[in-house]
Image 1 (cartoon, rainbow, N blue to C red):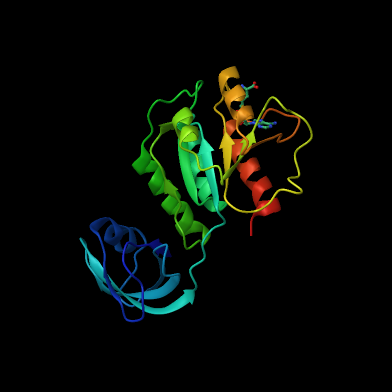
Image 2: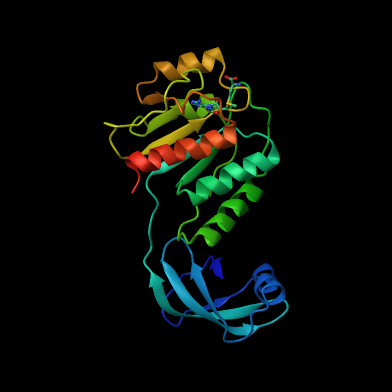
Length: 234
Ligand code: SAM
């Protein structure tokens, strides 16, 4: 069992559990006093811990030894237009598994969602990190209009724009430099003409094709992050 906690981790450190964590560990997973589990908090690497006290509403863990150093993901953000609930959950979960460092839902001209449950999506990112062996949980930002995000953009972070209008052979990204990047994925309706013009005019935006077929937005998010990771990730 791997658990993300909100406490410093170190040799001999004692960690109180929340009611939800106690319910999961003792009610669902049936851990008893002395049972081992792995902890991470996004800062101190991964630690082996044991159950010191187990109760219905709480409990305590004791940290024993570090099992892996802290590893930060490559500096890749994901900007995506939220789609249907289950598919949005999928995008966040897969982005966290594939090592996105930050996830920013953006409202575009054809976005069919005008609100998101940021807390739910953050919980999905956390579960994905717990499951996939990562020691880092990407932050999921609140929904923000794409135009506003672009207006405040740091030009040092390049944007890999999955542009469905290109529909050519999939890009290789050969010759691109590593460093801070973001992947941008549109909604099911794609990008509007105004958005395309805006994106084309920005010097830090690199339009890419993901191949000759129109992919669903959730497939496109996975494909684009994978493309970037293969060429520029670590
Ligand atoms: N309605 C749009 C159309 O028919 O042209 C398709 C939008 S697609 C379902 C959703 C998003 O996935 C797009 O905005 C784009 O970011 C990405 N995408 C899908 N297929 C792609 C491809 N072959 N190349 C680049 N991006 C793609």
